[in-house]
Structure formats: structure tokens, C-alpha cells
Length: 345
Image (cartoon, rainbow, N blue to C red; front, side, top):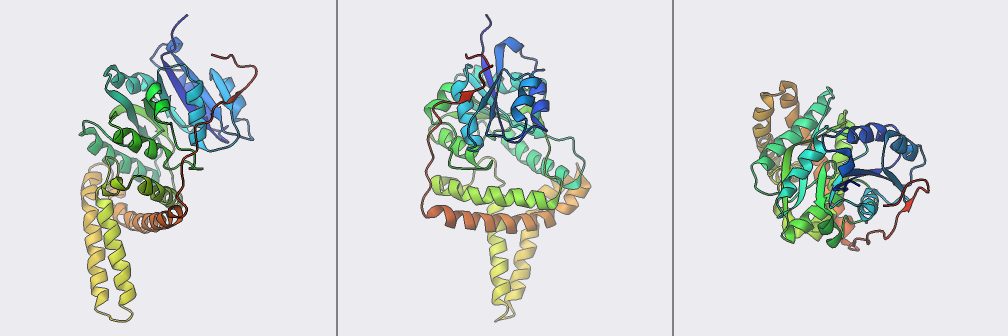
């Protein structure tokens, strides 16, 4: 009997429209099929997510009460048989060589985690902007010998390390920062995490400005919790654009100066200067994107202005909300209920 070396875990909630494509893509990998298993964790869906996953070829479908993606991933990790855990999302379609590329770094015994990349087939302006925003960050990460940030749309960990360090925190009820928390904990504990730029998954990005800003607001709100748990990361990490902190400061100065200008009008000049300085911080991306997509480059300063206002507000609200009382992570679920028709490991 062939050895299961890798376990691919896909959390899925109300995902009947996308989980089939994800599982079928995972069944068509360059790694021999007998060396990996596909585990879909149905997070209490009320649609046909579980049925579609089984029909598409998942080896096992676990079902747990709805508790969010972190709890679903943790349940899958406990049920897994492979020594390397791979995670992707139900709305992703891994490239055929994704497992091969994601697991290659683990030939180095010092590597405990790896991160892949997004790609998209979309052509809307906002989706193209999102993709280039990611790629701008990817270029910076590719120059680093190690990273401290792994997103679960394309992630891999040694199972022993994952379980020993407690997995994902389950007190984050929506997809947002549970993967960041684990990344920061692993990096702080001295584990080496690496970036794998050729481990790719197709994804559908937000295609409207409203959806893009809503996503940024949600992530920023929960980032407040992360900064309370990991205050040292307020100085920066290997994923976040270093310009973001300057942009927040300039926007705050602009807003305060606009408010103060009601009493003393010369402050409006200060507000104008802060806005100009803000736009100057967007120029590195504008120059970079201009060689790839001129429309994205032209839209970027204005989208970034709105993004900064939304993210700054979300982060401030998150810091206030999560400070009192301080939230703590719930433990990994001890057991997942499995469909009776599925074989046990």
C-alpha cells in the first residue's frame, strides 16, 4: 500500500458552487495520487457542499458544527495522515504542479512552513488591481530568505509543528487573520517559513470597489486583534507594504488638519500638504504597475486613498473592540464527525 505523504485540507462553508472545481484540480496533480489525500471539512453548510465534494473526488469529507475556517482547518489537521499539511480554500483552483511546488522546500529539514501565490483569470479593473497588489508584495517577499506571513489559500506546514504549536486560533469567526496569527507564532518560535512563488492557485478576487473595500475593512478590524497579541509586528512584517504606516499617519494628519481648519483656516494648507505627501507614497507602485497595466496604475492613488481611510478606521475600531476584554484562542477541536460512508484512516 502506498504511503500518504501529504494531506490537502480544504475548509468549505456554503461552497457548493466552487468546491467541485477545487477538488477536481487537486485530483489532477503531478504528484502521484497515492501519495496524497484530499480532506474537505464541511463547516456546517446547509447547501450541497459535502455532496459535491464527495462527487468531485475528495478522499474524505468531514462535517463539524459551524465554527469558522480556523476550526475547520484544525479538524482536518487532526484527521490527516500526511506528515505535510497543505491548505487551500474552497474558491481556489490549484495549478497541476501545486502540491509538488508547495512541498519541495520541505526537503530542507529546517523549513516548517511555506506560502504560495494567487493568480486570477479576471479582467475587471478592480480584480486586476488586486492581483497586481499581491504581485507587488510577492516580489518583495521573493528577495527574502525567510518570511513571517503565510496565507491559507496556498499554505503548507509540517503536521508535527502545526499540532505542537496549537494550529489556528479559533476565536476569529470569519476568514481574516487566523493564518497571520499562526504565522507570527511560528516565526517567533524560531521556525523557518519560506515563500514559494511558483506554487500557484487560481482565485476569484473582489471585482468591485465596494467588495474590495469591504474586504479591507474586515481584515483591518481583525488585524487589531493580531497587533494586541503580537505588538512587535506593529513595526511591520514581510507581507504588509512598508508604505502603509506612513499613509495612515498622513491621512490622520490630513483629517485632523481639515477639522482644525474650521477654526483656523491655515490648517487646510497642512491638510493639502498631507494629501500631496500621501499621493507621493503611492508612486513606487504606480511606476511598477505602469509597466504592466496602465489603467491600474492610474487608478491606484485614488483607490489607495479610499483603502487607507477604510483600513485606518477598521484598525482603530479593531484595536478598541479587542482590547476590552482581551480575546484568547479556543483549543483545537478534539474530534470531527465523519460521514459514515467514508473510510477511516
